[in-house]
Structures are given as C-alpha cells and as structure tokens.
Length: 142
Image 1 (cartoon, rainbow, N blue to C red):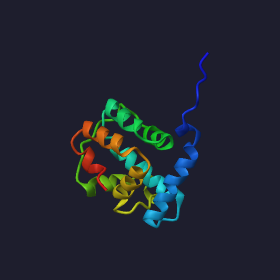
Image 2: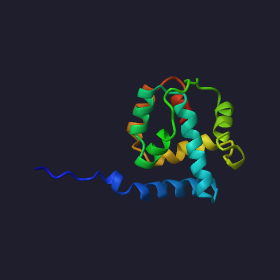
Image 3: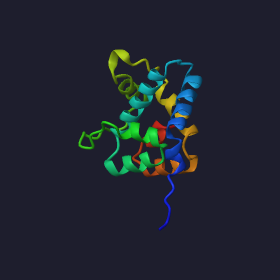
Image 4: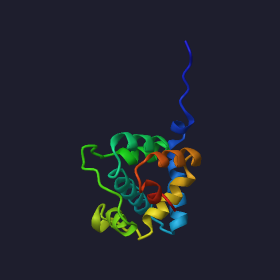
C-alpha cells in the first residue's frame, strides 16, 4: 500500500492565507483584515461573473487553497455571465458587495491583483489568464 502525503499547500493553507491578508494590509495601509477580506471577495465575485464554469475552475486551480475557496464560495454557475467592462464599472461592482460595510478603495482590483500575484505561481497564473475571455488579463493587470 502506498502512503499518501497531504500536499503542503493544504497543510499550511491557514498560514498562507494569513500571509496574504498581511500583505494586503501592508500594501494598502488598510489595518482591518475584514476590509481586505471583503475587497478580495468582491474582486473574486466580480471576476467569476465574467467566466463560464470551465474557465472559472481553471482559474481557481492556480489559486492557493483558501483563496480558491473564497473564489468559488457562494457562487451560482447558473448566474448570467457578464461581460468585462471598464475599470470604474467593475470597481463599483466590487464596492457593492455588502454595501455599507464595504470600504474598498477605487484601487481595490489593482490592490488585490498585486497581492494575489505574490501568492501564486506566476507562470501558471499567466498561462491560465491567456486561456480566459478577452478582458481577463486586463482585469488582473496590477
């Protein structure tokens, strides 16, 4: 019988997510973990609304485990697919998550993109973005 070893990314998932939140807080100068979590969730929801199921799963596969879970949590694949719009329009969508409790700045997408890029395999992330619909690479451009 062959022993199965738990992948390291799962063993250290919470620690890696804490590092992500700490990077976001340091880079944005936003002290609240709740605010940077909501920013991340809003950016992910806004992005996956523009993907079909297969594209979304390929994108999720390049994310670390906790970010992957946030990306797919509460998502309905039956929701009507939206098109990529200009940065101000998608930023307003990010900021609409939880309305009065969302303090995401106008730079939220850029800030999340920069932080996510620090925590993924850069080559794999770039490869998957090239397979996604027009607008996806621009969305994640820091």
